[in-house]
Image (cartoon, rainbow, N blue to C red; front, side, top):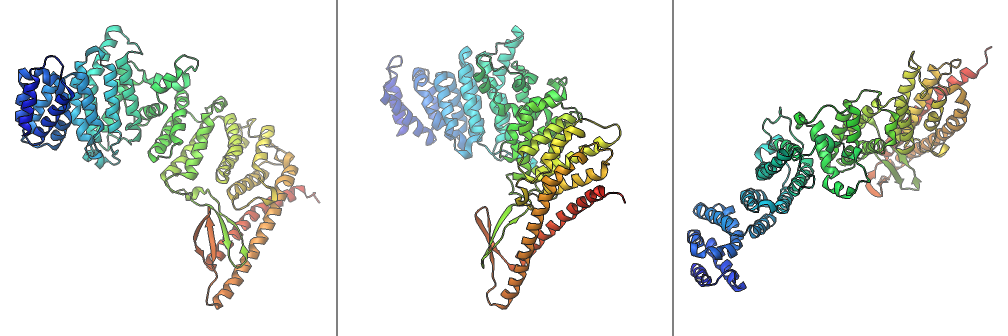
Length: 623
C-alpha cells in the first residue's frame, strides 16, 4: 500500500516542472517514503530515488527522508543496511546541502541520551560531505555543526578510571576520535591559507569557527577529564584528543604562549575586548594551562623560554577560577596546576610587588576553603551548641581546623600547596602575606598555621647572618600585635580559638627564651608591658572564668549522673549543630566532653604559666 502511494506521488510529480510542488506533495512523499523504509522496502525506495526521471523530485523532497533513514541505520538491521546506506549517499549527492545540513543536525539534536554516541559517529561523515559541498561559504555552517555536535558529546559521561576509558561504554572516546577526523579537512584548508600567505587573518571566518571548536572542547569535555599518564594507559583516546586540539590551535595561527599569557598582557582599552573575552573563555584557557604544565601535552610545540615567575603569574587567574569551583575534578586540577607552577619557582624569590595583584591573595583564600570546607566531606569538626535539659545550658566549642585530622586528598594537597606558596615568597612578601592572612582569614586553624610560619621566620632571622628588617625589630612589632591579641578580650571563646592561642603562646615563649633581654633583636622586651596588659592578663582572666565554669558544669554533670542512675528514666541532653538536632547525648558523653574542655584549659594554662614565670624571673631584681 505505502509503496503504491509512493509510486503514485512520484509519477504525478514527474509532470510538475521546476520546484512547483505543493505542501500536500511533500507530505505524501514523506509519509509514503517513511512507511516503505520502516516496512523494509528500502530496495524499492532506492530504485525509485535513483531513477533519473525522479532527480528533480529527490533534489527538492529527498532530504525529508533523513529522519526515518537515520533511525533505521541506527537499528543496524543487516538486510536493510546496504540499501539504506546507498539511499543516504544518493541524497547527499543530489539534495540541497543547506537542507541536508539542517536535516542532519536535527537528527543529532534529537538523539536521546542512550544513542548520542552512535548518532554522532554515524552522521559525522555525511555532515562533512555536505559541508564540503558548500565551498567557500561554509564557515558559519561548519561552526553551527561543530557547536551542535559538541553540545551533544558534552552530555556523555566522562570515564574516570583507566578501565572505563578502555571500555568506553558511553562512547565519549570514540566520539572525540571521530570529531578529529571530521574537522581535518577544514583545518587543512586554514593551514593552506597560512602557508600561502605566511599568516592568516585573525578574523578569517573558518579559522574563527575552528578556534571556537577548540575552546569549547577544552571547556567540555577536557576540563572534566583526568588524563591518564602514558605509563598508566599507553593508548589513551582522550589524551590524543587533547594533544590534537592543541596542535589544531597552533596550526590555525594561535600561539600557545600568547594564549597562556592573554590574561596578563591583554589591554582592556583595545576595541572589541568583550568579543575577545567570549572568543577566549577563561575556563578553556585554564584547561589549556593544565594540559601544558601538568599533563605535559604538546610540549614539543611550546617554547621553554618563559620565566617560572611569569608562568606562575599567568596561571594564577586560571588557578583562582579552578579553586573557586565545587566540582572535585576542577578543585584537583587547580591544586595540581598551582603546585606545578610553584615548583618551578625558586624559594624566596617571589617579590612583594606580586601581592599587589588580586590573585596572589584570592588564591590562598580559596586554598583555605579547600582545606576547611572541601565539598566531598563536612568539616573535620564543627562548633557545637549543646543544649542540656533539666535547666542546664552550656556551650561547647570544638576546634574546627586540626591539621592532624586532615583526611581528604584535597585537604592534604591544599595544605601542602599552601606551605609551598609561602616558601616561594621573599622575606618582605612573606611579611606582607602573613599580615594579610591574619586580617582576612577569620579562621583559628589557618591563623594558627600562619603564626607557626611567623615563628619559623623569626627563628631563621635570629640565626647568624640571617638578620633582616622584617622579622626583627620595628617591622616585627606590628605583626606581633596582630598575633598576640584576643578578638573579644576576656570573653573570647578559648576553645574555638585554641589553635591560634596555643601557637601565639608558643611563639611568645620561644621569643622570651631565645631573644635575650640585653640583645632584644626582635624588640619583644620593649613591647612586653603592652603584651602583658593587652594579651596575657585578659587571657588569664578569660581562662580562669572558662575553667571555673566548665569545672562547675563537670561537677554538676557527675552529680546528675549519680541521681539519674537511681531513677528509672535516665536524663539526656539534646545536641544541636547548625540548627539540626543530633542523637541525644548520654550523661557519660556529657562528662567526657566537659573533661576534654577542662583538659584543654589546663593545656593553655601550662604554657601561659611558663610564660608568666619567665617574665617574673626577668623582672625579679638580683639579690
